[in-house]
Amino acid sequence: MEQRITLVTLGAADLARAKRFYEALGWQGQEVQETVFFQAGGLGLVLWSRDKLAADCGLAPGPATGFGGIVLAHNVRSEAEVDALLAVVVRAGGTVTKPAAVNEIGFYSSAFVDPDGHAWEIAHNPGFPLAADGSLTLPDFG
Image (cartoon, rainbow, N blue to C red; front, side, top):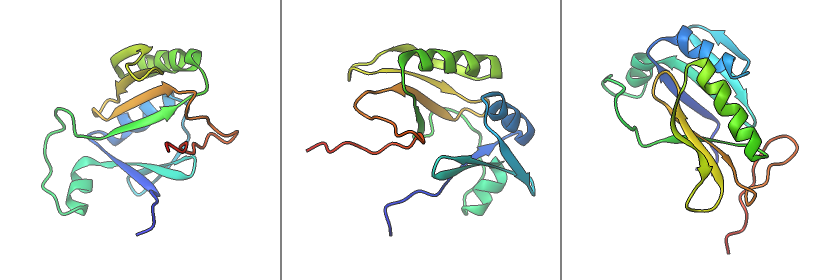
């Protein structure tokens, strides 16, 4: 298997609500056959019915409660950008779960959940510089 992720699909209890939330953040998507596709840098973010997604993976649908063990991250270029994006998230209907602050590792971050409970981190980490196109290349930790 090549070391690559091409799509991230988020299960939505209410697809229209989920689409409105991400559009309120400034994302532009395309809805095709009850599925919403967003180009997100070099990968796609997809919104689809939570029950249909579970069935497609051979899993039983279940309630969206508690932490699911996955956090999506959105790195930005400044602390001010973290704060500004958090304000947009709140206006769009997201819930801030961790206020913006310098974390124990030393960079500025915050966290929120979307209306379906999907966790996101917003971070400004100078050690993870962004290219002009917004892509991130991990540093050499050696």
